[in-house]
Image (tube, rainbow, N blue to C red; front, side, top):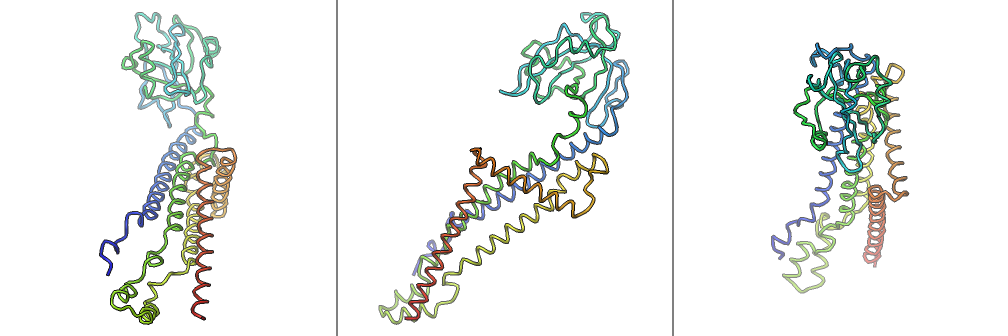
Length: 369
């Protein structure tokens, strides 16, 4: 008789289930992060439609009253261009920035007056020289004793990740009372999402979940049933109890059906059904993920009907699949891994199906004989 340790499934037996659970967790995390990002985008889109907040002066500025939706602010300040300094990129290859101290419009001397705060000019594609002293002077409504007086329209915020860069140029971040990030590329570019259909966060998380899902399918394809390789308890007991070959054959013939290899068709159909359900869920999830953004851009672009929502989900999934295929052709590592795993799973399923069919044919021939 076999020992209990031999009957107990090993760690490898549960690997497909573990990969499947990880894939589901990553997929759910991607949906949550994308929904959070879309809420922020929807808020910025609504702020764009409402228009900029009223212009405020530094003397009466109150963030609770003058900062609008999405952190937008419009304030009259005086720029100290002579004290402007470029800020190095926070990360290697990232955007740089330009630091400019800002004062009240009627300030007379930067050595006597405390700065109101700082303007940090930056953008995703910002490089040194993008904003110059001449370009700032061109936006002036008038000139004060310190520099040009401008209406600064941008996002009100904190130091964020620029504090170390400010310390490198000798500026103490804690001394800056207010920080404004002007809209370098304009208000529309800053507030409205550039591409609504592109699932930035969800797309990346879906690729990771897809890798784990394909690994789970590969594990299911490779994992054979234990009874395919090991004799059944009834057969093993017969070997231990008797040496009569005819008795052994009789016992094996009477063994329960659960000890016989099952057809691979059931597993393949379950896998295809799971894939179909995943696509359906994806179709229904996509409009939920992106409808919050598109509904803020006007009635003409609202996804009002279920048919439109499903079509949008289909289009997003198609674009995502096409992006993965094109990326694999372009030798993009992540996309190559996904396509390679998908091809491996398909090949393993086909090979396993052919072997099972061949074995079934051989068993039928032996029984007929």
